[in-house]
Image 1 (cartoon, helix red, strand yellow):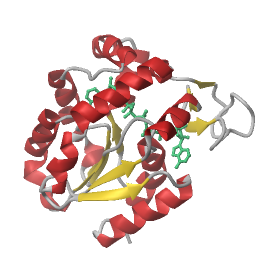
Image 2: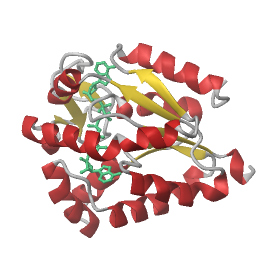
Image 3: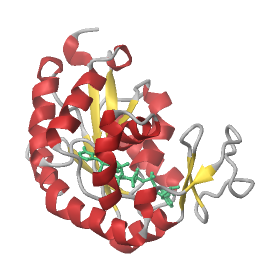
Image 4: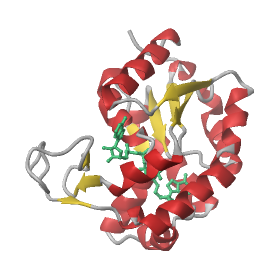
Length: 224
Ligand code: AP5
């Protein structure tokens, strides 16, 4: 595959807008790996690595992990074999410095292909995050009301235990939203100016968001 045939899709949206949920659904259809910085930090934390322990204090406070650490981690991740056709980026970039760094990393491959923006109201964010439950074993995402597991507290896919993320407490969610508007929102203009930003109405049920997302990606030649 030619270097610039790689596809890099950047999901932008506030916490709880459904980026992770949609990435899990469409990654197989697109044949691209889901590269989520939050998941990479949580994996490191679970394994008690130096990176995980450093990230923990920022994540627990709802703040961004320092750019140097995050950018290096993503650059290394995107060089792995499974990104030979591109990747679905979720949670990166999260500020202008990271957006510029990503352009540098992807320069040999034609840069970011498209940036879907998941739009939801703040009240919806709070409701979604407070009801989110995640499988400890396989990482599947549920919601106690909108997407409940068949048996309370147990993952439908692997039978693992479901838990609530430490940073999903109401006071931390407020900080995460504040950080989103202050630091992440400027990248919306950055991608808009290049003509690669697309709005997605993420207030709809999961299946309808998937339908709109896939239609958008198809229009851009990213799916059949
Ligand atoms: P991260 O893990 O990236 O969290 P986030 O961006 O805040 O995103 P979320 O995972 O909360 O939300 P989501 O949009 O994926 O929603 P989901 O699909 O789960 O980051 C965590 C922390 O890591 C950061 O605060 C920071 O400290 C650090 N970090 C990460 N990246 C970084 C970076 N680049 N630089 C520096 N620091 C970084 O859905 C939410 C819930 O809603 C679920 O329960 C789901 O079932 C439900 N749901 C989803 N879609 C729908 C729908 N359409 N209708 C009804 N319910 C729905």
